[in-house]
Image (cartoon, rainbow, N blue to C red; front, side, top):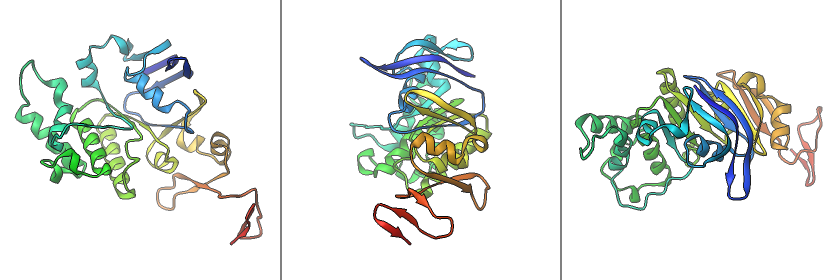
Length: 275
């Protein structure tokens, strides 16, 4: 279990997280959402120890995260950052193999098992054909898949992803979230920061919304994914309907609309009437 207890964190003189408390139980698949600047990435960086907390505490199975040795933490938690810039001309397989680093003995190289796990992670993410290609010679979306494969190869019980699919096309996003769901069903706890409301609702059973550095809504997707809740959080008109296949709620943004005339098929807006 991850317990976040009233944490305050930020950068220099800027306080971003203003007393956030959450409990994430084993084997959850949870979505963290909210407007730009709400504190989503800062929360992830606090969770992984990149940003120190100023007060409060974060516990992993009852033990403060800061007390875990680096390698032990890396065996339990894998993170896919929002941006991953690699300046060296490594092959993609070499980068995925870095996920096996926590398991290396001192001065030992990667074992056959490490290489097999890395290649399997690339197969699962659909990039095995890029194994011997340079990271400098793949697209932005392919590079992001390499980073996701590295996290999969790390074989941890907790996967944390910060806008991990933002550079991917629609089909690749679905493939990645299908894979994350599979890992969740196999026992992994999956924590996803997203801007894509509909992707979050399709895959995450629980959603947590942040705004202005605080938790404003936390609950099961079916309970919190509502017109009024989303419209208030994002300060724009949002309507929710059921997905035609899965029945999960999906959000629809209403462009330019101040008044929606129930008897007509148009919105009245500052540009006039739109058919």
